[in-house]
Image (tube, rainbow, N blue to C red; front, side, top):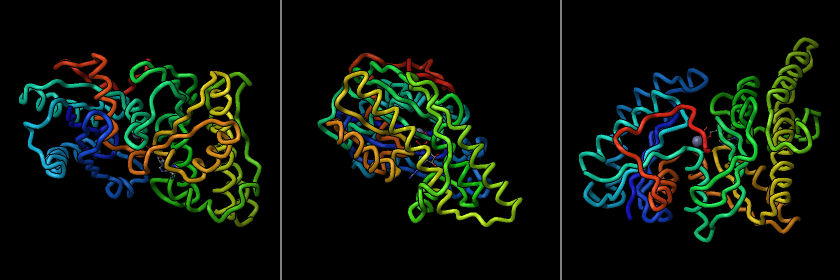
Length: 334
Ligand code: KG4
Ligand code: ZN
């Protein structure tokens, strides 16, 4: 079954064709990063306008790369939330029009479930049940994947998402947008123990996350250093901030795996591209005989192949949408 995936939830216009949920025949990502960089973050209105212009071209490229025509597509999977409403609406409207013209099914896909399914593309042997740490620009979630379409959220971010914290701190130390990869690079030559930032673990049973206290603490450090005329070592600051985030992510993931007796853990979302996270989490899980799975870097950040992958499992489980499919900016998993 060939599914055309469409993703326009934020600032990537993406289309991909995936066979039977796991075999990527094409994967086109048109990033708007250069356009939004000068504003220091994503401008929703501009994102929508660019999706509108770029989506038909990106879909044509996806067909061309897969050596296919529209007649070879069996269904369309489109992200219908969570995300920026105007951006989502472009993808959903386009997908509905195309599905009705071609007279094929349309499947609305949850963006976070798509991120999790990126793991099926890279790890052909991976099957539920497993635990997944989803860390992106908008979400930090610990999710129990009981089955392909049966997911339970164990914990979520109560304030800033991990990626959001990376982006904000990167901006404060002048690294620019998007902050995650830039801050990771800055941290490589820094000392993660140089500055003691708080690890907010909430109460000991909670799997929820909170990163706003860490963010304030870093801001206070920067401001008070400036006031005292002390020069900031941005490498040490980046490394210490990153370590405070990673310690919390790793502690909670490991504890959840143990508590639910799970021996497979996957990571997903933009922050899962972070090499320090991958290395440290692998070590912690290895020590506890827990297997770790991660997507290839290209499938960690936003793409449409992951949407087509999840769309396939939604389809075979009967979760098929219709022409009333709507964009839901705060779509949840349950
Ligand atoms: O999943 P994603 O592409 O988009 C959302 O659904 O939000 O995630 C984007 C987020 C951004 O906050 C970006 O700074 C972060 O992922 N990110 C990283 C890295 N690469 C991307 N954060 C830390 N380290 C990275 N290497
Ligand atoms: Zn995403």
